[in-house]
Length: 163
Image (tube, rainbow, N blue to C red; front, side, top):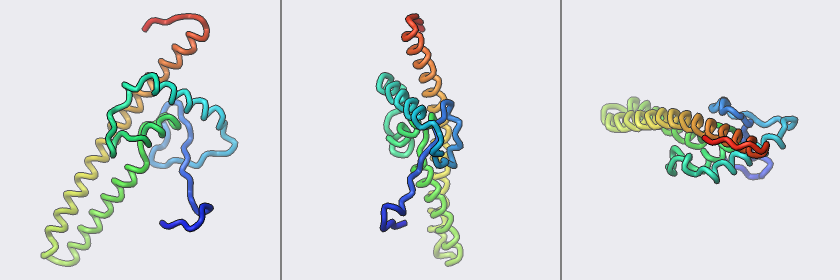
């Protein structure tokens, strides 16, 4: 898509979720009446938490753990990336189109169909692996974040908890 005016751009926004149970395949537009101030405070608390606990983030990996996964978790409580989902889904679609085209062309295109099938299989496998890892990382980050918040509340109340 080519946009000629900034007014044509579409900004993707996400609802905040304290438990990470957003519908990850269908991010929704933020409601203007939503408590954005509270959402922003939670996002900032998550940023502070990650700064103090960088060991909880997986190593950078372009298609699995990147800046968007971290930013999305800070905003929504769900560790994932829409861009990679779109890239992988697009790769699967392209592989299917190539397979169909090769089949229509005839037997000389069999290698194209085989390559497309392999590409689709690899992309599907990568997506499945990512989905599992994103779910696992979401649970880890949310559990640790809740513990961190509880400790901060206890410290503010003057008590000390040893864990």
